[in-house]
Amino acid sequence: MPAHARRIAKSRYAPPSRGRRARHAALAVGAVVISSGLTMGVEEGVSASPPKAPVPSTKTFFACIEGGEIIGVEAVPFTAQFCATDPGQVLTRITGPQGFQGAQGSQGVQGTQGVQGTQGNQGAQGSQGFQGIQGAQGNQGVQGSQGFQGFQGFQGAQGNQGVQGNQGFQGAASATFKSDMTGRIDGLSIGSDLEGGGAPSGLSTDALAPDTLSPAVAVRPSNLSVRLTVAAPAGGTGMSVALVPAGGGTALIVCDIAAGATTCTAASGSATMPASTAYNVVVVNDTGSTWSGSVLFGYQLSG
Image 1 (cartoon, rainbow, N blue to C red):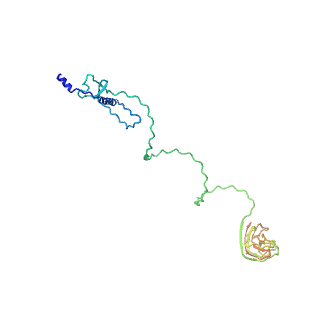
Image 2: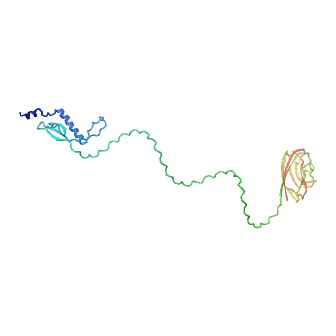
Image 3: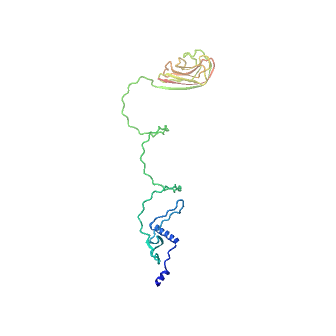
């Protein structure tokens, strides 16, 4: 045997066993998977850890095929005598350039709803908004209550003299004046005097106020009003209050108080009081019983 044949025989490449061939076939398939970017499926029902992103190889792999089986896989540069030990061994390239992008897969099934996230932090305060449009005019409000009386204002400046007015029409004749007269007689105690029956003439002066002098013009008494502090006794014709000229004479106005009453009024008198004439307010008791009390009176004189 030639020397070089003996050297070849000594260092002849030993094909791998069938088990090693299977492992080499798996390595070849793994090389194809890594080179092409494909992924291997996982049997249904078997849990798998999250897939890791494949790392594409930059090397070019070759497979040694003998008898229709892959007996070895190596990348360039090869080890010594790789796929060169038997005449039936064939070396073939098993990785190539990146293929075209495959078609988009169908949409996967919607996953289950995730757990509600925690509440986020409060956002920053927004900027001030623009001024809104002016609103429409509101309805008329309800009338407010009357306010308090204000303070008296300051005296205004003297106005200009007004234009002389036209002469007015002559008015009807009327009284030139009217005077209110009031008085009171206290501490009276009047016995009954049934004589005269309370008529205006012949009145007895059971009680009277001090003399009063009429004005310097003739006047007529009216609107006599009387009030007793004690009611007139029951019986008789009651009590009377009258204006009578001093020294006696016809009563000018008389007011009759019924038994048991305290007041009376007389609207107008029966005569005119002469000018500068003294007269009295006379109280007459015709009840048949003594009466004690005070008399309040008021009347008007007009002329």
